Length: 249
Length: 249
DNA sequence: ATTTTTATGATTTTATTTGATTACTTTTGA
DNA sequence: TCAAAAGTAATCAAATAAAATCATAAAAAT
Image (tube, rainbow over all chains, first blue to last red; front, side, top):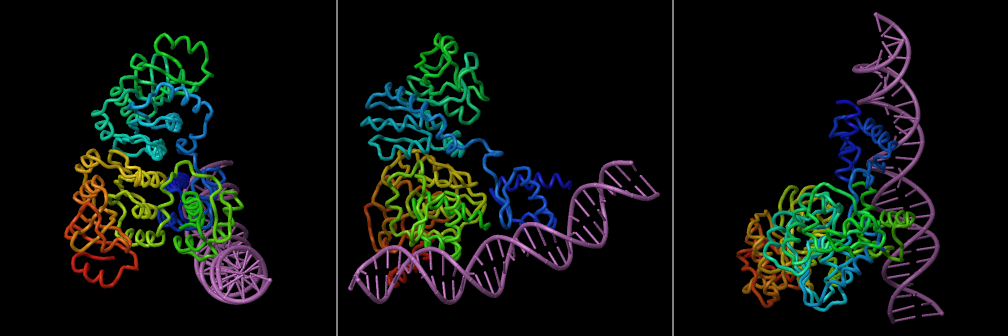
């Protein structure tokens, strides 16, 4: 095996396991500990890992997508504004669907002002946030997607099938006049689609940075969307184009 | 374990519990108190925690850790002991079912030592605890029961129906020679029953205070239970009676 | 083909980590 | 308030790991 190959594999191993010991790597790749140390040294110089006594630890965020925790505090003010606009649409007694995501999580924080909602959410953190509320909380089953804390997969979809809700509040990564609402993950897209189908009114939550952006998977056409809630920094020309298709709040 | 890994875990523990004692950490990570103090010192230098006499406190409040925290601290040492016994029964690659509850939550904290488990749990907090792990996490849907953070109801039961797991770790509020395993809540009992049905091996986790106690709803007969894991304070006569029916660890 | 460079493993030297021990400090409660 | 208990810091020696050095073998360049 090429030395450079080995280093690539070591990097992958460290990233996958979050850390690795020199001995472990030496055994696994059948080279001496000296060689492993030299490899780790190189990888450290390149900024790919951080060395530690006895081995190395992965540098977070290099190869991984930004996680929920990192995203949580991005554009916090915008998210709160969007949440406050969204909450205006909700009335006590309703059944609402809340998509997983940081913007909808901001909305869930505003639900304290109500007394009796039924909240269906595939966001595990949203459910926990609402534990102290008087609301009924319903969670579709599924596989936990760690990056977004969303429950996804066929089970989640099937479960939603049997529901009917007044409103669905759905997050989006891209909103575009032609491509509609898009998101980077296929399984999440399917869940979002299902959520939209089962609600009388579909409301998309997205800060201004998501507009004129297209990501991998199409979730909804703009015709299927009733309202889009965004912050006050949305470009006026973009807004004028879209407003002919959907309500923009 | 790499020293740096240990420090990362200590930081996580302190953040999750909001504080931690030196002795507690020393026991949990099986290192001397000197080492723990040096670790805490390092973490303090990095600005990650604040030290205090006897231990350390978290600097940043964790984003999602609501009110059930208080209950979590009851009989913490016993729960950790039970969790450590339970973890001995688990092997990498297995599919395990984890009931909701504080004792099983303690077990989930110990699952970091594995690399590849499939964990089915109806405990929302347990799922979140495992977000940073490499394991596959599956959640049955259902209604969120706020007091215990358990997902319950027919949806959860139906979902479990389609599963097959090696082991089910189930919490209990009462264990009695005649009444068997009991719990105070009917819907939770149904979920527990289903969990037991779908696992090859049924393991009950209960501290000594739960023995010779009968609560409202019967979950399982002792014949249906393979093992009971408890702490070291179980009354010897009680143990002798039960040991003829089930393994007591 | 021969020199030069590079990679590797073995060996020795140096540094770090750790638990135990002891002296010191803080906390507790009588 | 003062003494016992609990906790911390400082120090030491053993164990473990890293760095430095060296010899050799494999590649690369000439």
